[in-house]
Length: 211
Ligand code: VGL
Ligand code: ZN
Image 1 (cartoon, protein in one colour):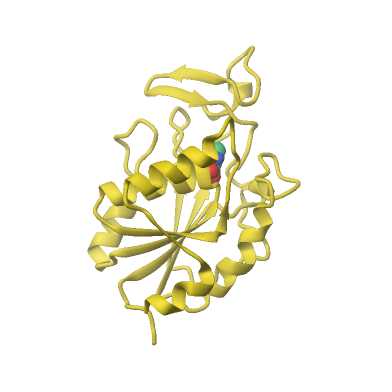
Image 2 (spheres, rainbow, N blue to C red; image 1 turned 180 degrees about the horizontal axis):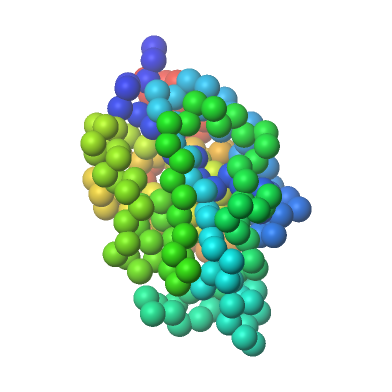
């Protein structure tokens, strides 16, 4: 039985810099590609995100003299983890993984484009005011249930899932199609926070049974 036409696969940041060998490699990050490709072939709608930073972005440690990767800084909107330079606009590291079968994607949302604001979330940037437009797009098209996959579980997947719940969407994370960075226990905390927010979990192989 086909999935309802209101279902969307939202694929978060499957980009070279988050894969093994990349600037901000997520352990085992390339393992998400095969299940995502299987799902993307038959989901009613597919939407992708790309982390897409200008050079010298505020989330890069090198932008802040004296700071090391994974330090934090107080930016105008609050505390920010400082990352190695990654996903710079137009670079190979920012490109979608070559093996990702992205051809059915109807929309690609690029986020983190403002020099002074990071955006883990696909909906709302880290200042918690600047919107990416994704919520409006989904609402205008009547899309209501989101299956989240991609990288990283404890940052961009987490924030996207929580913001999607706040915006009133039904959300399930495809647990074999995500991988985490795990900074100081952030991965376990992410799963706890998502459970508290009413984010569901499903294995990609069980997705057909939801139809
Ligand atoms: C991400 C850290 C910095 C992610 C993006 O995609 O989870 N993490 N930028
Ligand atoms: Zn980033």
